[in-house]
Image 1 (cartoon, rainbow, N blue to C red):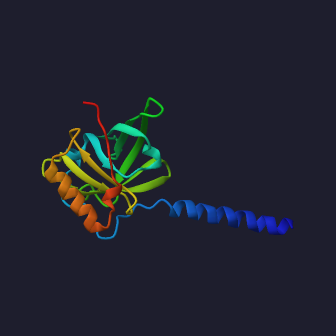
Image 2 (cartoon, rainbow, N blue to C red):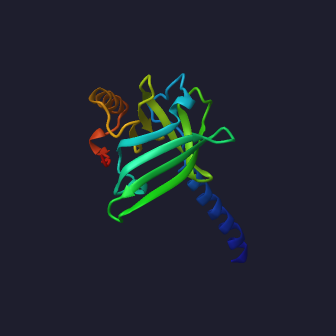
Image 3 (cartoon, rainbow, N blue to C red):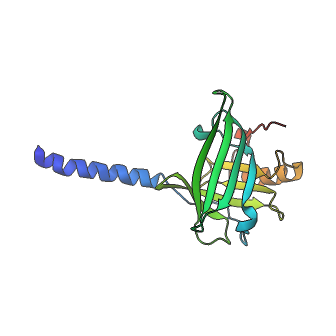
Length: 180
């Protein structure tokens, strides 16, 4: 029995480790393309979350913002903040993003719990970098961001049409409330 445990325990731990690493995907949904000629310095700064799918880590949150700043190592600091209206308290999560290929392509990976990384892809953005459509690595993650607390109808319609064409069920989006 001791011999079996010496083999079974490491094998089980190895399988568990592979399962955890496999759950950390940094890809992009089929049919989506990251923005080319991406201007990473122009993307930095504060963004308001206008819409999202209902994620466990953002449950019951309004007034959600993401602030991106350049780190000394060339990566991007990600500071997500929002108000949990059920618990009546602010929540903040600090992470780090890296470009998957280079900083001219809006394909990044983000981590709030290293070594676990997830896909974060800028798949549409306006010329002035005021409105952005962000996907995760699959059709379970989608965000609409704005430099303002709202988004003009023309960009809302454009982003919804693009998300639908990729396969997202945009009826499931939560439209985030922001204090005036």
